[in-house]
Image (tube, rainbow, N blue to C red; front, top):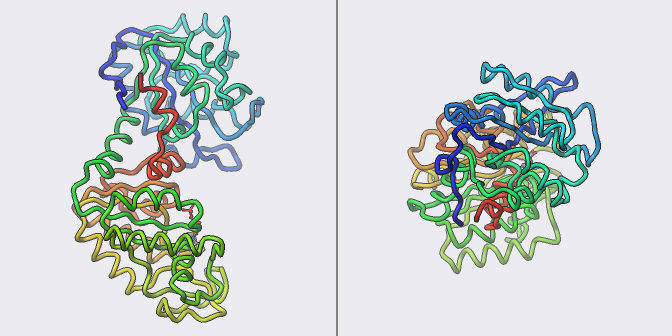
Length: 394
Ligand code: AMP
């Protein structure tokens, strides 16, 4: 793929349409509870300002399904962005069309406008070409920095690129692509993938794709039980995807053929009920009592996994090792996060829950790269071409 980056495009004094992902979480009082995605775009915005560009920011928020939903307005985001950048942000809620184009033409060098939620337009998620054309008519250069939305081909990151000659990626998108490529395309070996989370079904394509790229795969979380079942072990009341037991067996066979060191938990923290207060104990993975649920990896598994991490030069992690939202079952996930932070390897963490786990363990600054994409990161792991990136490949 040949993608131009923002620093390879002339943006001086130009009207730059910047697609960002400001799809941030809110609490019930409409307060933004995590502004990571806003701050992550600051380097690109600052670079545009340094080059006296006139910025038109476009984002989506939530799933308004093509209708105006007041609770999904980007107005509070404009306020937060203004606080972060210490600059005025013009929030333009005029619908796309001549009036908005006039307002945008009035922007002076170094001014920033944020448009209203692009998903209020029914055409956005349909990748409507006319909508893409209207978006393109707002500026002279189009820059995409919305990695977390890159696995969707929508008007504001796909159709728009058909109507504007100068297109490229911002610094956030550049970092996401470059770090991922360093881990999966030309990695320093040995390479280890840690895959966890609830279900095998959502990680199946990723597992199949990484099998040919890595030296070790460490499997934890709820999905490990379908693998343990495939080895003929009893798993009590733990999470199971019965229809995927054969597939899990195939994956293990394939790993053996390819000489990939695929490791499953050897001991498990089990409880009688799926709740934090339920008394728990550690049992061997081949001796899980019938009336218990496996909710975390045990200490021997932590040691086993940590040994592999310590010997790896590149580690990529997606999905928690246990039901880590419950503090009593967060030890496995936290220990892996700690070990990854201690290691000098290239460490890349992606997917909402693993990112939360790394933050919870207080080690995010010791991880080489934390992806801002959940679905987009997983699709990269699956080996898919992301529509948002393909659209920039001119
Ligand atoms: P995912 O979105 O597929 O990465 O899954 C994340 C979810 O998996 C989290 O909400 C965890 O609580 C859950 N999870 C991890 N391990 C287990 C387990 N052993 N049993 C049930 N849920 C789990």
